[in-house]
Length: 99
Image 1 (cartoon, rainbow, N blue to C red):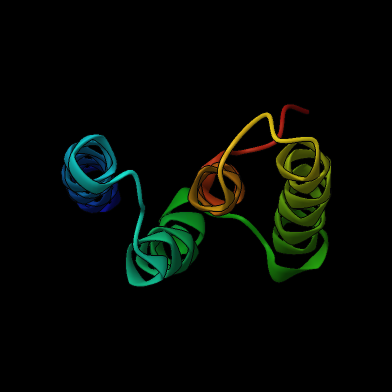
Image 2: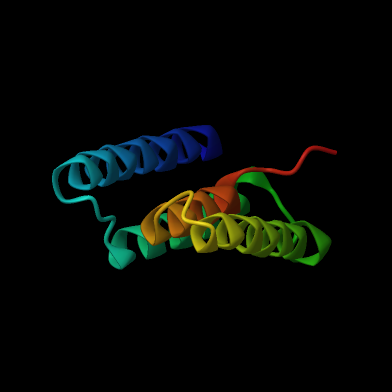
């Protein structure tokens, strides 16, 4: 059952990424609510994946914050948009760190 739930979460993530991509192509913006939903969708994925609160989830949050800081610098340099920065950080929440 956890595998089916994880697959469903990944399918939902894929649908949200399609919405983000089409919206970005049309309006050159990615809504904050969509970035927030992607980031919050990582939490049930962590639980299904068996991550412990400490240190696994804390590492996920720390690395996502570091990624956000790195890409915020790229935004400051004009290399990418603010919505893209938030999207990368939100996606990083759901990625498991290599061990």
